[in-house]
Image 1: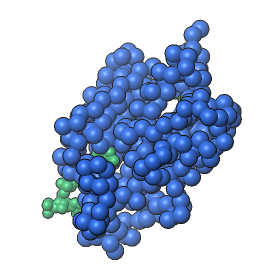
Image 2: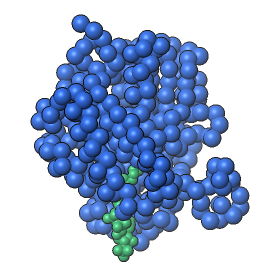
Image 3: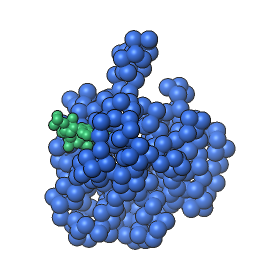
Length: 327
Ligand code: ACO
């Protein structure tokens, strides 16, 4: 029997502070009714001012290492997917490596927004399969509250903070990753972006006054692209592995909007009890969304060894990806 790359352990960390729809009603012209009906979100988490992306990541990573039964010193590679890093320089992965007391293994950040965790797992899989790494830590970590304009009702109701990690390593077939795909289409790059703080618009008094350091999103225009991309990529990875939707034990779509999840589920023909959703209490945590769901499913027993799990993501770039694995 051969071996492939699979998930050995997961862990997640949500900040304690809960921000409810009622809290947001006090900040912008919105309502619990609108947010619930249009997104499915009731509350989201918000990190304390003194917490950082790397700090929460280290907590999540320790839980994942514990479940995997390995130490940080055994890691060969750390990939941190984030669009809300501790600092532009150095990588958040470097802080995580230091905080975990890992060896001087390669550690880098990956920027693919909501698809970032699946991109990271796909990269990790290549390293494990070609023998360049045995154990890889992949983290999806976002403190999006630092990049949200709490005067912009189009974005502040959706996004939340959260972090999750997975340790990947060799597993005996038929377990492990069965199929994966990653895609990017830059023609939609300005549909979801942070205008300032990079080389295009370096930070200045003007950019701060113009609130250009916050996330801007054409949510309405992304909606259809998200549904189409999530459906297509899901079908493609299922086809690659010759698995039909009825065989799935669990489908974890990126938690962008409950209406997107419902539309993709219906198009794919996956029954409702097989689709995991935590968006009502966590919101959209970008690259942390899928690994938080996966960790919750593993820890609450909803996902068991041998289950076929499909994960599909869509995010800024735009990026989208899918992974089918046998846990
Ligand atoms: N409260 C009340 N009304 C609102 C709010 C709000 N929070 N936000 C928008 N509205 C209003 C709009 O102003 C508009 O009013 P109008 O008709 O008078 O002009 C009306 O509601 C409808 O606005 P839409 O933008 O069409 O609302 P929609 O139903 O599309 O919902 C949402 C907006 C939730 C953003 C949705 O479009 C969505 O989820 N899009 C997908 C986002 C996504 O997938 N992003 C990629 C992943 S995230 C990442 O990568 C980091």
